[in-house]
Image (tube, rainbow, N blue to C red; front, top):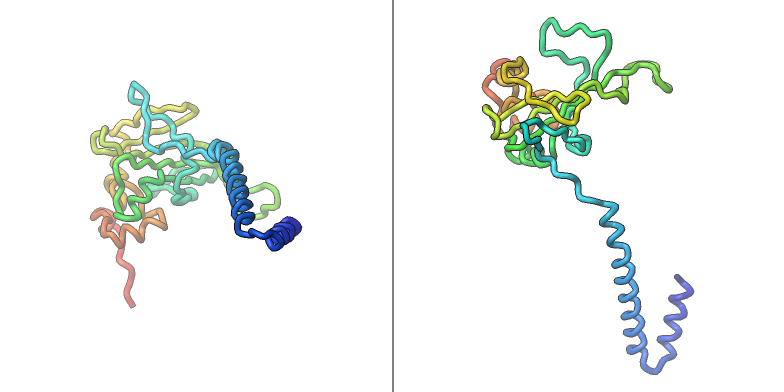
Length: 226
């Protein structure tokens, strides 16, 4: 590049009409740059495609389609061996629960402390591994997904919220409202039947916006004041 620059400067200095030559060279450079952009743009567009929409989708018979790109959504938190029962389920293995929410809903919550219609949560359960590579203590997540559950806010459902449990299928029927998950979320969730109390980036927002549920506030002791 330095060599080209020095030759350009010499040609301009020696010419009787330096302005004309300089303008001509600049014009050629602009045309060349535009040509490169025109060639590169299609490949860039094909490489960086827009993310798929994150609104809930359903089959003709009312089953929910698995939001397969949920791992590109907003990661909220991970629970480890959590149980909402005092007795708890006795398992012979450890579990991680990863929670994701669609980006559109997350942005609305940041601004209002509330969940909009079409909010979609995905809970991904993975087994815990203790032995692997250089690990000597503690646990890390396995590559195998043990379960997938979706909690969606959609005005098409009575009560606006519905649960879906996915196995190996790409679609799932709605879990009946008689299931314990509905009453548990309704009675103990911090915000609009969702367990915001377990999402460290969202709980402060709900407190600031004043959207914490009465039920949650009643069962949550106030911090001691010194």
